[in-house]
Amino acid sequence: MTLTRLALAAAALSTLTVTACATMQVNSFVERGVDITRYRTYHWAPADAQSTGDPRLDNNTFFGERIQAQVDKWLGDRGFEKINADGPDLVAHYHASVTQEVNPNGLDEPYLNPCANDQTTCDPPEPYVFDAGTIVVDLVDARTKRLVWRGWAEGSIEGAIDDQAFMERRIDEAVARIMEQLPRGL
Amino acid sequence: MRRLTQLTLAAIVMTAITGCATMSVSSHVERGLDIAKYHTFDWGPADALPLGDARLDKDPFFLDHVQGAVEKAMAARGLEWAATGTPDVRIHFHANISERIDIDQTDVNRGYCPGEGCTPATVSYEAGTLVIDLMDARTNRLLWRGWAQNSVKGMLENQDTMARQIDEAVTRMFERFPRPL
Image (cartoon, rainbow over all chains, first blue to last red; front, side, top):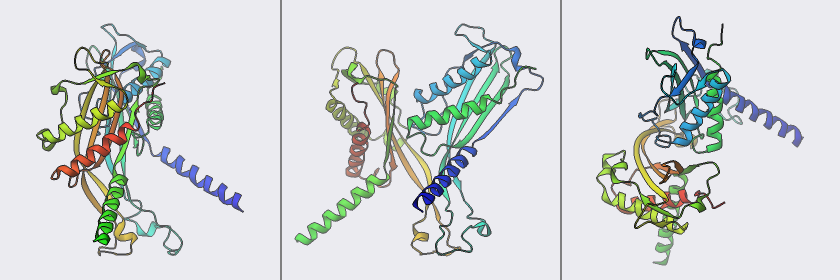
């Protein structure tokens, strides 16, 4: 009996976790007519002077360097070479921002309330506020200075900044999903 | 009289508990950092200490109190203020006040509904963040960053409240300070 309950609780918990991950929105665009695979080398543009919108992340090298290291890993796997000398084909740039968002959670749709038929024992969903984070990765043609590829991911980072290991996992996941969008060779 | 004292004490304790519950404190640290290599510290140049809010920029009490609290916490961990020469660690701090929103469920949960279909209220408040950075003075790399966030309500008008908040923020931040390896 207890075991069944435990299993149910575990199932509910894992569903929650899966849902939380699934809320990450990922997208990208490529400049029309550009074949990204003809570029070979890149380097990083100087760090962003803009605020991220969260003082905990502004000038936070633990955060910025994790993003860069992950992007480096993915670009390396795709055959791009990072060079520190002048004259790379691409200039890479990242930007991160944090904003507060409200999840009304059914507040506007009482007919979706799962507790409509069971007011006594069911806890209705409650609206909540969360921190949403966006990471943008740009690849710019070093000669023409035109943006040739942009990928981004957006999702809840609630609790992530205050937990360094969790933040790193969240960055790794976001960058992986962004870089998967990078077009492969024809 | 004695009863009054007890009541006052209870009120103070309650306030302290509520105050603690809302301040969130955390930190980031360089992987593999051995703090035992560092012995002396100094503050970064004044121009490298931009504050995010004019109300704090013009408040020498705020600046002094933060510096005092941090110096005390550093001393307690065996780091000495470098009167001369190059320090091992350079400290920067940054304070910021920004508008944040929260959802107040209290009325709804207590069954008290102020009309309008009994929906939770969205409240906005001013959140203050105090960030303290410890940099390696030679390499200029960030070693540790600690921060505390809390509503600044009542803090800007009252020096005692501000002093208490700063003390709590710095004390709790430094509880997370890296231990020697």
